[in-house]
Length: 330
Ligand code: PEP
Ligand code: MN
Image (tube, helix red, strand yellow):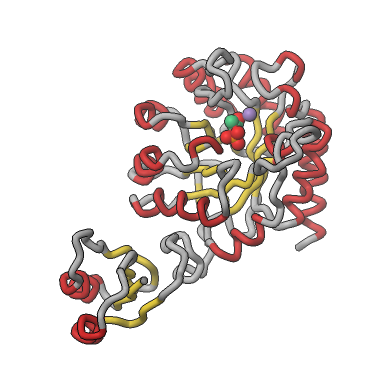
């Protein structure tokens, strides 16, 4: 049950009355209203003694409260140095899967910037299915990525895998990326909740929409509400022709449930470069507020994820079509 109070003083009075071993902490909600979440069903007399402080009681609400549009109807808009994300804005995030070398990330950055991207992506810490695969260039990669982003006046987004690296990655990046495999790494989500920096939260490959909203709530509960939700394809039974199934329906559904921007990554959904463009356009048609795309100038020699990488020319074509689709659905 969620109890809504008018002020935090009232919320504290209610909390003090609640007989609980698990202290109920007020969760700030909206318009000066304060919510107490996780309240067990109260006996009538207990409810009576605090009724004067209660504005509203809500039962059967999903547990993601700060993330919910019910309490925060306006879209969250996130402003970084070179990008505005959310609302009616649209953002292209693009770059190689991994930071391969300082020269390479800079060249790829030039190409994607020229095509309209404002956020340069690239992994320095790579979550690989096999421990014997390339694991990323670590801090050297972060340095090269930062230098390229600065030189090109772009924002940097990079994946964080481990709570122990939060401060290191924080010292380089503009935006954290939590990958599909870490969407429910609660320790990591809590650590990012303490940072005043945007987080791209990718949907777990087997996560439901409520799982994703609750993962976002972990970040928000810590005090960080600069969250960008990313649909990147979910695991389904047919993985012969695509790597994952892009859940296009998740885009409008999430937008109806949450005020956070919802963007799409068609690269990991498709897994095959020729399917990236149609899936990306479908995501935009469904209302995605941004796209993340992997590119490479020599896909067959990419360190990671070459099969799904667009060439810079293909990416340019994608952005042109993407802008036409955006125009068409205005
Ligand atoms: C990536 O962006 O390179 C990545 C590893 O993505 P995901 O977590 O969606 O697999
Ligand atoms: Mn990748």
